[in-house]
Length: 266
Image 1 (tube, rainbow, N blue to C red):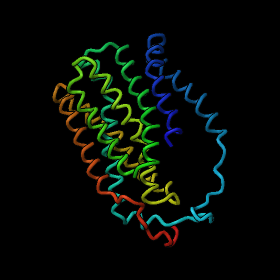
Image 2: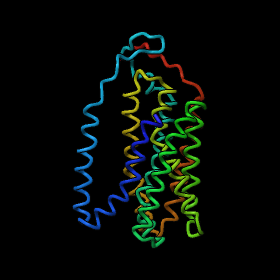
Image 3: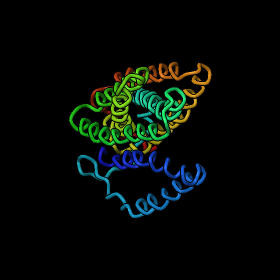
Image 4: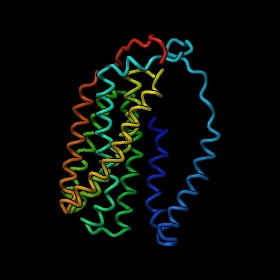
């Protein structure tokens, strides 16, 4: 999973530099158009030629059948994971979506410096995906997910001290590692808790909830910045969200929970 997610980090690392250059030459309308066309030209052919998955087998080698989602929806771990992932995603999204404004409005960074810092974050996210994927193969994924949220909270805390020399680079590396592992660990955690037979349906629900957190958190951060005149209060809220995520995930069972999946298919 870590290797599969590396492409997101590579693309994310290159886009700030590409967007800055395109914006200088074509304006932001033209830059968005070029980036959109590149997405179609690169992503569509790759997705088109990806082969279908082989016939799915369970651990005993027996062909999997569709299982019921109802026992999972009645379980406490499902809601703990959903809430924990929402808090974690909200903390990451609220920070990353407002960083460029924070750099320009509060820190008076140039466009080049802001782009370089964002690229460093996304470069570090590549290592974060590989590192957290490796750790998830060795240690219980619950503890890896807690570690990721701790890194995110620590990194956001460092934003209070970025005027000190070199702190911004420490922030970029720590936050990048947390960012890289954050989105990747959620499906791994779900698979460990509930197995893979209904993972698609489980992740469909959890990622929908995460999508709301992903969309609303940056708006909340921006609103707080407008009301307070700086990002300090918003950063405190993001740290609190990360802490709530840590508490929720810490309440998850340490081993794969055994649900009655032999019920009537949903």
